[in-house]
Image 1: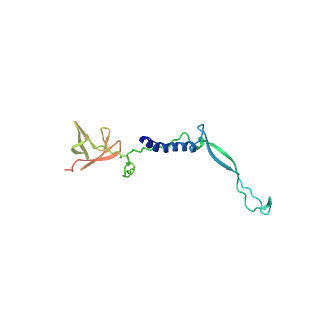
Image 2: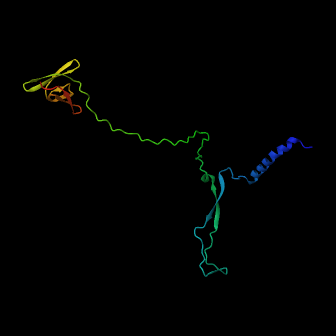
Image 3: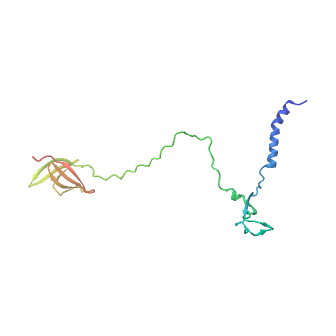
Length: 186
């Protein structure tokens, strides 16, 4: 009488046993000491030919003789497999997207701004013509200045011309001209 559970085990264990036997007989037999059994045939450098019309053992030959392998050489495992390199590892569960990558945008390099003179710190207070030359009264906070053409103000401004309705000042560090409205001639 057969035991019902044993037959089911043999259906599973039988093919596994046959597969293990096949691997033992036909499996990889490379030695673990570093030598690989890869055979590279070496061929003579130039094929030998027999001149036509001469007999070789009583047979006339007009075609070249096929090359004969000289010897078989074992190639070391280190040459076949580069020991320091590893195959790249793929992340099977990484996040993937169907959207194309954003185009690479080159950064816009703006030219350096050209230095400009600061706004005039002076306020027009009044003017007076004396001896054919104009005098202009300017205010800066609590200070009041009386200026004529060619005069320096605070070491940073020079009065170039006074011709109502404009007065021209030059900002000396940059050499830039600035105009200040001083009103019409009365």
